[in-house]
Each structure stands twice: as C-alpha cells, then as structure tokens.
Length: 402
Image (tube, rainbow, N blue to C red; front, side, top):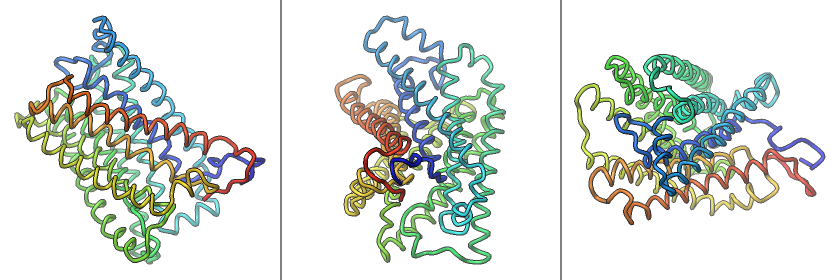
C-alpha cells in the first residue's frame, strides 16, 4: 500500500480486535500496582476509597506508584474502549464483502471470535475503571454482579454461536484445510471463552451473597472446561500440521497464545478459590496457591521460549515488524508479555509471599517484581510501536499489507 493510500489499519481484519484486547490487558497490569501495593482491608480488590486513603499517608514512593497506576489505567482503559468502538464500526458490512465471504469459508473463520474476546475484555476493563475512579461503587456492587453475569453470558452466547457456525460448516461439508492449520490460530476461541469465564468468576470471588457466588462458580467452571478442551484440540491439530508443513510465518505469534489463556484461567481459578473460601468454607493454603501459580508460570515460560524461537527462525520481526509486510496479527504479540506480567504479580504476591517464601517489599520481592514491570513496559512499547505502524499512513516508501 503506497503512502498516498489509506492507513494499513483501514484494510480491516477481525484480528484488529486484538489491538483493543492488548490495550485492555495493559490497563490490568497497572491495576496490579494497586491490587498488591495498596492496602484494602476487608476487600479482595482495592477501590476508590482505599486509593484515597493510601494517597493520604504521604508515602512518596507509594504515591508515585499510585499516580503511575491511575494514569496507566485511564490511558489504556480509554484506548481499549476507543479501539473497540473503532473495530465495531469497521466490522459493519465486512461479512458481505468479498474478503469477508472468503474468510467465512476458510480456516480463518474463527478469527471473528476476536469480537467476543474484545467485548469480554472491555467489560472486565470497565469493572476496573469503576473500582478505581467511581466513589461509593462498592456500596452498590451486589446489585451490579447479576448485571455483569448477564452481560458476560450474552458475550458467551455470541462466542458459542460463532464457534458453532464454524464447527457446523467444517463437519457438515468439510473444507477445513489441515495443511494450512500450521499455527495455533484455532486457539482464539479458547481465548474468548477464557476471558468470558474469568469475568463470570469475579462475582464468585467478590460477592457476599452465597447464591450469587455459587452461580458464578458454576458458570465460570463451564467456560474454564470449554476453554481448556479447545486448547487441547488446537494444540494437537496445530502441532501436527506445523511438524508436517512448517509454521505459517505470518501466524507465528499465535504459538504464544497459550500464554494469555493460561494467565486468564489461572486468575479464574484463584477467583474460584477465594469464592469457595468466603462463601463455602473451603480454604486454599498459601503453599497450594504457590504451587498452582508456579506450574502455570512454567507453562507460560515454556511456550514463550517456543514461540520466540520460532519467531527468530522465521525472521518474523524482519518481515512483519520492520519490513514491508504489515499484518494485523502483529497485535497477538502484545498479549504474552501482558499476561506474563500479570501472572508474575500473582505468583509473587498470592504465591511466594502468601506461602512465606519471600518477604513482602523485601529485596527478593522487588527483584522479581522488576521482571514483571519490565514485561509490562515491553507490552507498552509494543503497543506504541504497532499503533504508529498500523494507524499512520506510511511515508516515503511503499508498503503492502500481509
């Protein structure tokens, strides 16, 4: 596409919903500062009043951290919503277009599940914005939980409807090209279902009403199982094709899609564990949390190393990040560092500190936290770079869309 034509992002693809998802995920990484560093006695999460109280303590370091967190949440929360709206507008008429019809009759049909993924991410992000910036929200939170569950169930219905259409097409008439399934792109449905499930698990962790918590536990468990099942199927099918045909270079970032899915399912399980403790008296010890989170983090590290190895082998950065080809799949690169940053924060605080292995705010604590923060700002830098690359018209040299 030459510089006299539209921006690369104007050649729209459903994968651009991942731009919204990535921004929403980064807002969560900033919320981790508040979650683990701001005291919030009697509550699972910090709220506006806790933040104001912490600022009133006059601790310079804590005030700086809170200020950075609030700015990050506000900026990336707004970017998440603006990109969601932009994508929804671009989506109009897409399926009626020649490009949309071609996508609907190919392996890439599941790309449209980036829509429920983005919707679920924005609902989760909106909840964080409310907790942080709306005074008195906690006093009416019990009334909001049923509404949130209805919203997530609507997103879940959309996700299963889209997945069902795909399954019906490929099972009834064939057409699934196994040779072209040489990536983990078919894990996108699992990502969408996991994001819906973690939203349904929030009432399980936060509600003081045992009935609401129980419903949240049941519904989130269903989405957890569905997501895990699709991950297993996608892993087997994708690896078989990759070993036979080599990886699809443009889709190589999907090899790390297991990283954000693992983080989301890990948070879902932690929320369920807290709900079981508060509402049903089933307690999960700190050492048990440490081992659960350690195993999940191990999975993420292994798949991150696998993905980075393949990206290097295919020359992905040279071809699709700094070269002439521009791919909307670039935004899949944002989710892994975001997810690892968030899971590391939980591993450090809910795992290592809770088990008594390290001291909170000690040397080891900050050394490990620095890794999580480095991953976070890697994701921030990626978003800035990709926004300039995709949402600005190319200058000087001709560029093409992959």
